[in-house]
Image 1 (cartoon, rainbow over the protein chains, first blue to last red):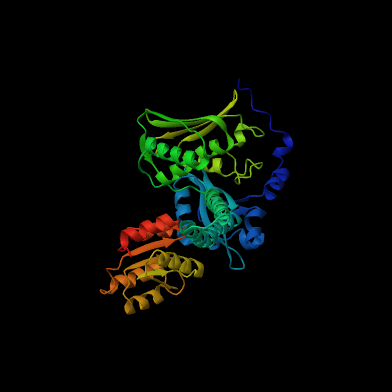
Image 2 (image 1 turned 90 degrees about the vertical axis):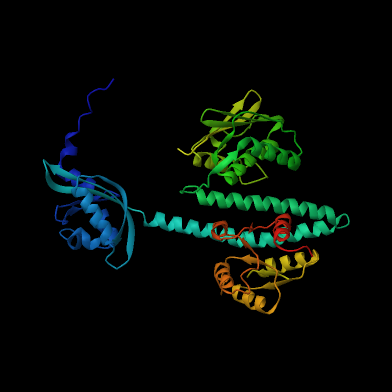
Length: 344
Length: 115
């Protein structure tokens, strides 16, 4: 099926057009000679650093790097014929400030002769600031919400234990359930914030998924007053993060209990190198596409949460190298997760 | 006496009151330094220790406690809203905030004699 490549229009070949195209690019481009001299650069390469073309082109690239070790490493790799990809580096601006960049580069060789490098530099300073802000946000969420929730939770539980007359006892009961919901939302939000643009860290150990499912099914039945029959088959042991897995399974079970209609069914099957868990309930999820179920803030019609539960399920399962799917149709909804027994 | 060390006033006073309602003798300290001072004056049988505190953090407190042979044996239950920090704390019983009454009772039960 492969046809001839499309003809390059003649105007593209005109140096004036090419130079204009390159000079207005949104990414920094430059050539460096074998001695480290910047032979040529486009505006996006030096203007964000505060330099003019004269202050930049013709100078040695090492003058503009904030870390000597990293530019040395880059130049050595390139001279050895390696291609570097998104190499993190820090560049010094004219005003003394530093910007974070990622560099992709390789050398144009003619025979064995180093002609010049071809460097593509992307500024990631803003992205890093966002990530740092996210980390601070998570820390503040954790600290400033979990602390007051501690005195609220323990305090209410102690009052409940001491006993109250009606109707105060009923009010207390409702208050405690609301606090539980807030607790759950806070944990979901922290998880969501942590996984944005980052990896979810796992602490793997041997887990018996059958026993874990049985316990969580029992807890969900008690908490939500639904019948949730559970069956298991085969070997359900594997190396997973037990806390994370509990969170994912619990989210799936609670989702089925709260949003699904009877009959509910949970099935765990372990054969070969993976374990599957299927959670089925009656009623088709409506108003949303099967693809969107796992997206954050997906079910906005719900009054029970932010719609982060299933998103977190997918994040956890994918962090374990598995996948999460949903099948909606024929009057029922079936969630299925696959978990490889071992880390890849 | 059980010593509750936490810079969060509401957490500290709630835990002290809850422990007292359960029949324990309990008192509060605002940071690690205040806790050490208290332990050198009073008979403390268990420390509930928050980790992130100004003046002297829970980690620093633990270092100082272990250096003092008269205090080193007192059991410590770490508690924190920062779960990563909690994992880094070397101790058998740790409480993740927000703390549930049952978890608190369990931790105190394994480390302190019944009132």
